[in-house]
Length: 482
Ligand SMILES: *[C@@H]1O[C@H](CO)[C@@H](O)[C@H](O)[C@H]1NC(C)=O
Ligand SMILES: *[C@@H]1O[C@H](CO)[C@@H](O)[C@H](O)[C@H]1NC(C)=O
Ligand SMILES: *[C@@H]1O[C@H](CO)[C@@H](O)[C@H](O)[C@H]1NC(C)=O
Ligand SMILES: *[C@@H]1O[C@H](CO)[C@@H](O)[C@H](O)[C@H]1NC(C)=O
Ligand SMILES: *[C@@H]1O[C@H](CO)[C@@H](O)[C@H](O)[C@H]1NC(C)=O
Ligand SMILES: *[C@@H]1O[C@H](CO)[C@@H](O)[C@H](O)[C@H]1NC(C)=O
Ligand SMILES: *[C@@H]1O[C@H](CO)[C@@H](O)[C@H](O)[C@H]1NC(C)=O
Image (cartoon, rainbow, N blue to C red; front, side, top):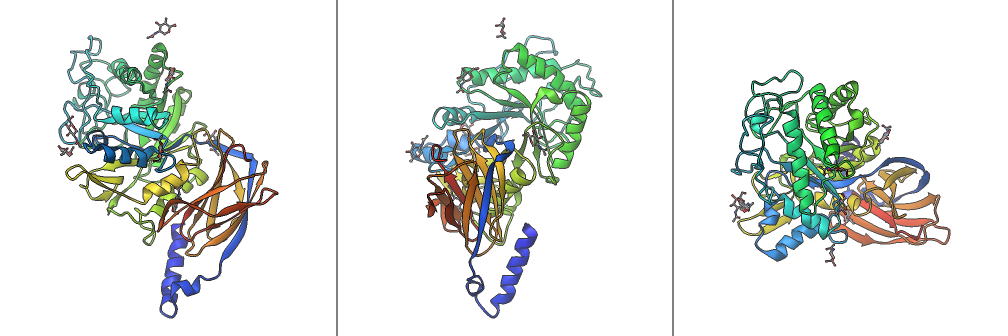
């Protein structure tokens, strides 16, 4: 994809010397997209972002209440914002809240893994609880992923929540203080119960983040076999707490897809795959080249452009921070790699560092914010492809346009079209298995943020519309009209 686009750009640049690009792209592409509702693929869990490392406080602490509502709407509103349906929160392990640390609610070593622990829940969870309550109560978000970057330091081989170290008690990690696996499982379940008491059902629970990386902040090492050792303790602990209907275990948020393939294989060998609900992976050390080696749903649980300077652009030569690049990243994960959930890194972040690891830049000194077009790329997916949607097959498309289609739980159908071509294309969509009676189309490109665009439906259900050049355009067939 990136390759083809490079060629196109190069070709246009070459022609640009003698004619303007507009003169070259007059020819309008057209084609027919066949959607087949009977050929089904994975079920979609949703699209989201993280609030970890006190980023949530930028929303929760926002003193200008109108701005605070605008930020929440941008993230969660299904008609004016991205309509995100997944939140990834961080379960704290830090002894304090200095810098951007996520504080633990068990800061004091009780003296040993079997000693009685008194938890100190602050009701804030680094600002994440309030945003989660808003997401659930105001916007109907139902998928809350709580992920621990580390166990509290005293449960680990290095006695520190940072700098790697392993959980005492897993294979190869013995500590003079004993086996802390059950204490860590109890700690995680206590977190679920604090949230439950505050009206938020955590649905996905992770106990690792990038387990092959010893970061200077909260981090904990684990092999796949060690992860399986802990899963076998955590699973019955969730059952005993009567939380199995609400929450399932997620593993392992590896740094890259290749790492996660290895973790997954080891978990399978240890017989613990069936105790998991979801497999999660990041892409920092490498992305996927095909579906993960599991029958479980897979989430791309953290991805972003860490290197580029802050950019709000939709398209600037296919840059890693571009909106169009993210429309394509989601496409690749969902269509080529069987991903069920896609979670961007931070939803909001202060201006420093000035990178693209956030969707919205919030300056808490001036109470101002700036929205990257990446958010609107997600909107085209997230607003219309809702949790529980089943991906169905599509075939055929105008040149330069790729498509994906989904049948939502309520019967509505979303057809997502992404154009990498500089020129607009005319599309005809035929749905086999339904006769659409109505259609709405929405476009995001350089000048539109998920705005309504023209599309029509004929008496026989054939849809006609247009896909703008370098846009993501979503054709939505409302429930009850298919
Ligand atoms: C949010 O408020 C807390 C105090 O409740 C403070 O510790 C934290 O630094 C504030 N963070 C932001 C981003 O405003
Ligand atoms: C989303 O925004 C629209 C327009 O401002 C508003 O009417 C609606 O109430 C918002 N939805 C939610 C769930 O707040
Ligand atoms: C949370 O789960 C409980 C059952 O465990 C259920 O009764 C409640 O409705 C759920 N709340 C939400 C907001 O989904
Ligand atoms: C779980 O449910 C069982 C059966 O209803 C009950 O006996 C037990 O006390 C419950 N455990 C917890 C931790 O709520
Ligand atoms: C795709 O993922 C689903 C779970 O979401 C799984 O059942 C199916 O086997 C996967 N397909 C492939 C080709 O890996
Ligand atoms: C802004 O956020 C930073 C980092 O969390 C915090 O230290 C500072 O107190 C906040 N400033 C205001 C005015 O809330
Ligand atoms: C979809 O993406 C296009 C950019 O191609 C944007 O203009 C449009 O506003 C987006 N639509 C929605 C509903 O997000």
